[in-house]
Length: 135
Image 1 (spheres, rainbow, N blue to C red):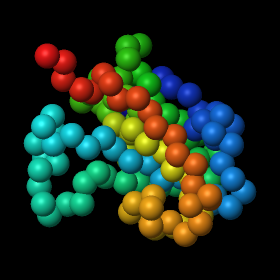
Image 2: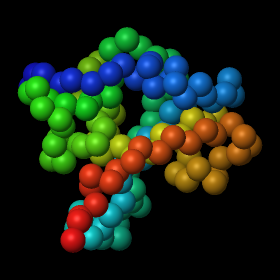
Image 3: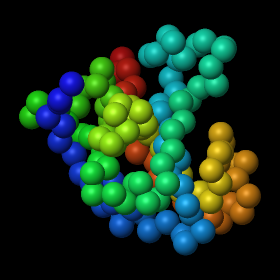
Image 4: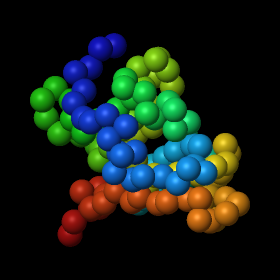
């Protein structure tokens, strides 16, 4: 399926974040709000969903972060506020609703506090205020 995504290159985020040289991977995390997403109440899956890329993959000119589709801002159903698009992965690694990026030296890291050498992790949090229900 071909979708006309709009967004910006992942490499641009790397330029802004300036991860430490010890960082070999980018860890991305989805939002966690079971009151909005009932599927996150399931106990059999360790929410929030986490995905990762190597710094080399994230630097590739084809990897980009989606902010829109069909000429409009990306909707919640399509993965707002940010969605990863990595065309050569054929749909794999296309994490949606990204709210946090961590740069780490560890390949597998469920929680940032588990990483060895906390100085090797630089956190970037995306404001997900649009995802919160307003009363």
